[in-house]
Length: 271
Image 1 (cartoon, rainbow, N blue to C red):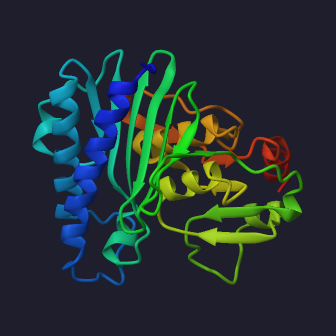
Image 2: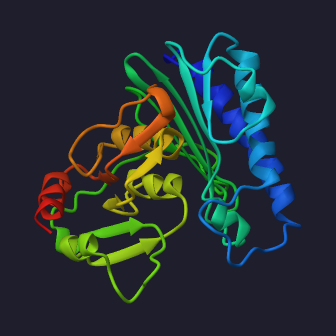
Image 3: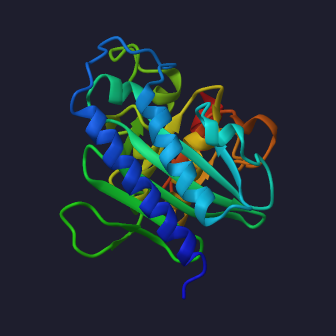
C-alpha cells in the first residue's frame, strides 16, 4: 500500500461529499454580484462541517485547521504532529457571483511537510491531488482513470502564462505584473484553482501579491505544484511554514514550473 493511501482516500471522499452539498446549494443560490473578498456563506460552513466530520471520524487524534467558525472545529484539537488544513470553499466570491471559480481544498501536514493535498473544482468537474513522493494526479469528470500531472518546460518569462486573482483595475497592470511581463494572463478567484493550473501545466506561474494569506489558502495546492515538478515560495523566496500560531502566511506567493522561479523572483525584487 502506498504511504498515506488511507489518508488520501478519506480526503477524496470528504471533498466529494462536500462538493455534492456545495453544488446542491449552488443550483438555487441567489447571485451576489458585488460580493466582497471577505464574504462567507452558509454553504462554506456546511462544506466545512462535512469535511471535518469525515476527517475526525477517520483520524480522531489528528488536529484540525480550517477557515470557518463551526461546531466541529470549535471542539477539535487545533495543533499536533498531524494537522489537517481545510478550505471548505476557496474563492467564495466566485461561488457567490456564480462564476464557477471556487475550489475545495484539503491537505494533511506532518513533521516532514505536506503529505497529502486535494483540490476539487465542483462546478467544473476537475479534481487534482497529490501524495508526497508519489506525484500529482488529476481525475476529471470526463476521465475514468487518474492521469499524471507535470508542470511546463517554459523557460522564458516573456513566453509564460501567468495566473492571478481578478485585477481591480484590468487596464492598469500592477508593477509586479509589469516586471514579469508574461505573454498571457489567466484570472480566477480561487488560489486552489490557480495552483492546480500550474501543477497541470496549464499555467507557468501563479503570482499572489497579498501581504498575507492563510495556511488553508495554499497548503493543498502547494503539494500539487511540488509533486508535479514545480516550486512554491513567498516573494522573498522562502518556503511556506505550516502549523504556526495564527495560520498566517506573509509576503505573497509565487508558484512556478521551477525553471522560471529564480528569474521571476529576481524580476520582482528589481521592480
